[in-house]
Figure 1: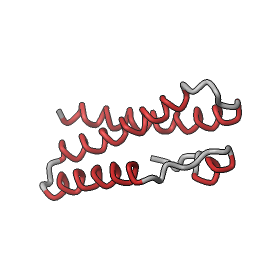
Figure 2: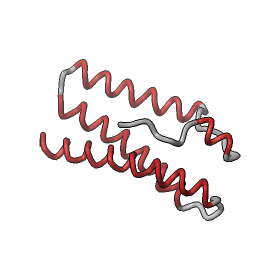
Figure 3: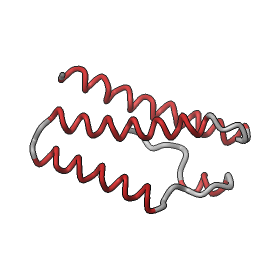
Length: 101
């Protein structure tokens, strides 16, 4: 997936705090461990499912962010632009999953 224009520095510039708290890091670690297990077992379908699960999580976060009614137009533009890339990655993983089913 290409780099997203919504980096940690931009989040701070817009008055937010990038999600680097322990629950986000723990979720990322669990996803990594599940992916590592799938790779170790060399199960292509399991690997694709883990990647898609991560894409689902990211997509949901962006959808939640876009529903906030207190966003400035500039912030909404940045989130919407980044979401296009997130949605593209999600759709590619979904199509890949269906092609190996």
